[in-house]
Image (cartoon, rainbow, N blue to C red; front, side, top):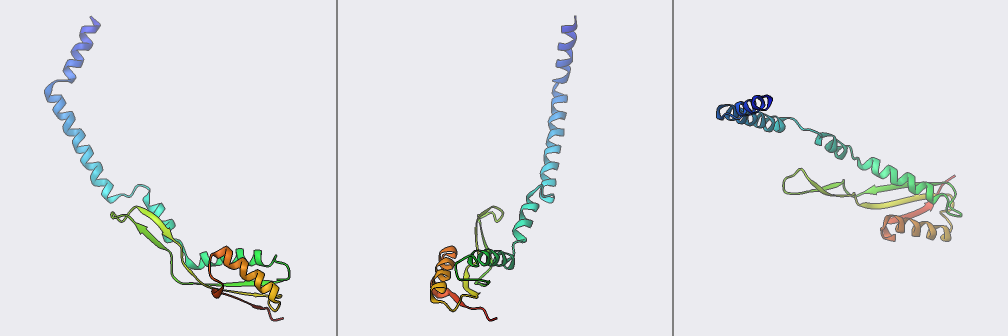
Length: 150
């Protein structure tokens, strides 16, 4: 007896009028979600903010401090200060849809100035120049090493 009642309920749910109204309601909900998604950005805003927060000065300061700490450990260098000059800002390469970032091109280093206590010794100058050119993958023409005034 209960089976007949449950079959009757199932048949009642699948009446053509009810199916039509369920499909219409589902369609309206789907259209509303699509409409809302064009106005509400669910999560990509945080990713874009990180890109926008990139700063060339922050980037160069980090490289300067890293270089300064490493170069000061070279034998004979002593107290060291480093200055970097950058050629351009960071560049982002996007796909045709302008939302998917494919790669990020870091700023180019135009030159490096290293001022250290041992900057008057040709051996120290050569060691520092080699270290900087290898670390930053730049030519020796872009590196200047000089003595720190006391």
